[in-house]
Every structure is written in structure tokens, then in C-alpha cells.
Length: 396
Length: 186
Image (cartoon, helix red, strand yellow):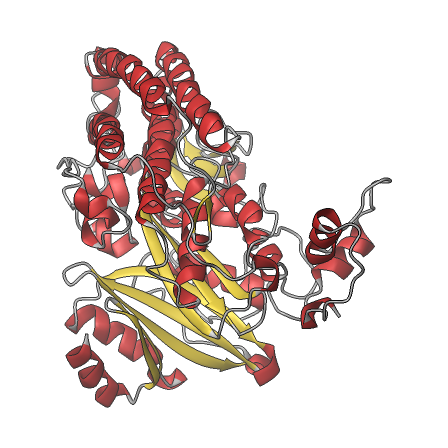
């Protein structure tokens, strides 16, 4: 975990005790304990990292979560299937639409209604998920620049993300939490003139994408600090269950849209970008390329989708909906990686168990704690953003 | 998947095998064989990616259903290994030595369901509910409503509606309620 400016010196490290823990004596004044968070320093979310420092170097790190716990999974268990939708979307603030889709797909599959969703609704679901990815990346990629004090990138990103939120508002009536994807389909067709306005926004974003590239990747500070920093070796991918861009930046091409295609992804032309070095620079570079690719995917979707069509299949009355006993695991590729849901029903009108599996569950705990050892305290924030930590999906 | 199910099914005496989709299978295995099977699937069948560890409380039948969900990155398939654990003696062998992230799941399951995994790192540390001294909060017999009523207060002016009744009154305000009530509403 070193970069051009920081080379850790292991000789200053504490020894290990018999049980494998570090022999840290804080009263010796050789080590300091510092908490980062739970108020988040950028786009890392409300979580805390308890760090033991030797000088400005981290010798031990522990992730603490729970500051956002609202018991969503338990709440969903006590509600009708359809009532789970407005609750579930808050499990992931970064891309709430992913939860809508997973619950819709789980309930459809367990009710034996797979295949009932009309083609038009499938296209609109794909569009909503790619719009969600785009607004997430517009926050995440410039957010990485922000961790190295390139604040203008964050301001651009917030502006561009707002353009996509405008389109979401037009399509769904809401900016952040949409509840657009519902069991059996979606809530509405594209409003008149939507494609034209979306294309205007994408043209603006095209222009800024180039500026963002220059701002980040032509910047000597970013290069000096991000190259070689917070490396995920390729052999960690399976060992830690790393997914998404974090895996692809280490040379392991995994993308649920390609590996287990859902919705209309098999009809779209794209190849997930990869890199090999697995450091912060590589992860940012892969995400920047995905930004370009997502804009292209939205254009492809709008060009290929039919103009009209049914948006909802035949579904039972959702207020009297009972689903036979069963279980499934459904997943999709979110902007942060594989995002899955284990859904269990028992024949009643409420789910028996809903368990969300977000990428941060691994990335922000096991991976982060391991990765921060030997890291300079100044790089912690950049490391967390590069892993795309998102505590709500850990705490559920 | 069919040949895999036959092969592993014979080796580990799998029960209640359900192929949910072409690429997803769930099956029960005896508690004593579970970690051995998870290890075998990782080392010999290519299920090298650990996706999820979860639990379902089947309180009426007196057991917890633990799930180890494994993914094979080559065949793009998932295998869910399920284990039934007695609710009164909720202890399971730890699997933290197999994947680096498993201790996190086990720590959460200890807190949320009260299932112990002896030897698992930091298994007794609080996870998301710091300082919690009630019954493990994800167990079915933990009554969220009762807890909320006893712990918090209701803001004046707030109302709770039963969705079915509320929609019926909204859509058909003048129609007397003659329809047979849903079992859940009674």
C-alpha cells in the first residue's frame, strides 16, 4: 500500500501477540488511536474507521457500521409484498432503483410470473437502471478527484447528476427514490419529448466527461498519489469476494450484465472495461470508462426500444397477493458491483426473509480493514472512495 | 447443473434439492457435513466465489436455516447450501478459514439471530446495533411493533392505515363493506 510519496517502514510496527492481534500499548505514546467518521468526509457514507497509527501510518484498522441502521429487512418482513418497495429503495441511496428491480424480479419469479413483463417494460427497466448507474458514476468518479482536493470535479459531477435527476423526475415524479419499477412492469411510459431532452443532457455530459478526464488523469498530484496506492491483488478477488469495478480494475472481468444477462442487456453492444494494476488509479480509470460506456448504453437503449407498448403484465391484486413457499437469489450489476437479494416466501402475504447483498459488505469491511494497514492516514479517504463504500447496504 | 447435483447429491446425501433456475440450486445438507461440502465445492467444483451467508428463522418448526451461497465464476452458476440448526442450540462450525469475508457474516448472524460460531474472529463484537441488550433483533419472535411502542413515542396527529381498507374507502367511498375480508385483515 505505497505510492510515490509514502513507503511504509515495517520496522516501526508493533509485534504480534499469541492470539494474532497486535501488541499495541497506547500508554507508550508510540501509537495513537484515531476515528475517521462516522460523519462522512465525502461520498464514503456514514461509517467509521477506528485506526491505530504509528506516526502517520496505519498499523490497524477496524470498520464500524450501524449509524444508518433502520432495520429495513425486518420492516419488509412485516409488510405486504408491495409495501416492501418504498422501504427497500432506501437500502441503497447511491442507486435506489436496483432495489426496486430486485424485489420486483424476486416476487415475479416466486409467483411464477417470469415472462409476464411486457417487452416495453423490460426496456424501460433497463433504461432506469442505466440512468441510475450514470447518476451514481457522475457522483463517484469526480468524487474520487475530490479526495485529492480537485473539488471542481465534484461540482461538475453534482451539476451533471442533477440533469439525470431532472429526467428521473420527469419519468417517475421523483428525483432520488423513484419506485418506478413495480411488480409486473413499470409505472409509466416515457413522457413526450423525453428522448430529445435526454439526448441534450447526454451531449452536455459528453463534453464534461472529457473535462473530467483531463482534470483527473492529466493531474500530476492524482497520478503521484493514486498510482500504486491501495492495491487489490488479483488473488484477492475470490479470496475476499470482490466484485464489480474493484474486480475489473484488478484484471478480473466480472459483470452480471454479461455473465448472467437480465432485462435487455444481451441486446446491447458493450464490453466492460478492465485494467490490471488494481490500484486507485486503475479503479478510477475503469470507472471513467464506464461513465463513457453508460452514456453510450443509454443512447443504445433509447434507439432500440419500441415507441409504444404495454408497460405492465397481468398481476394479482397487490393488496391480496400471496406467494407460494419458495426462495430465490436474484442479482444485477450496480455501479459498485454485484448487487443481490435473497428472497424467501412462506405462502403468506408477506415475505419470510429478505437479505440484501451489497458489494460494500465485503469491500468496506474485510477488504478495507486489510487494505488500510501500511497506508498513510492521508490516503484513507481516497481508498474508501475508490472502493465505493456504501454503508446503508451493509446495515440494511 | 444436473450432473453436478447428482454427483454432489450422492456424496453429501443432499435433501430437498430445488433447481430454482438453470443457474441456481438450493439443497439441504446435514449440519456435520456442511463445512466439508462448502470446502469441497470451492476446491473441486469451481465454486470459488462466496456470495452470501444468510439465515431464515423457521420458528414454527424450531430451526434456523443457514445458507451458504456459492458462485462458480466459470459456469456462471450459484449453489445454495442450506443447513438446519436447532433454535435451542444455535451453534455452527465456523467457516472463516475458507474466505476472508466470512467472519463478517458470522459476526452479523451472531448479533441478529444469536447463532454462535465458536472461534470466528470478533464474533462477539457488536455489529450494527451497538449496545443492544434485547433478544437478537432478526428472530421472528422479536416484536418490532412492541419494541417501537415501548421505546419511542407516537407523534401526535399521525395515523396508521390498513392499506386494503384505506384503498377501498378511497376508491369506493359509498359502497358498504360487504366483500369477504382477507384472512390477513381479520
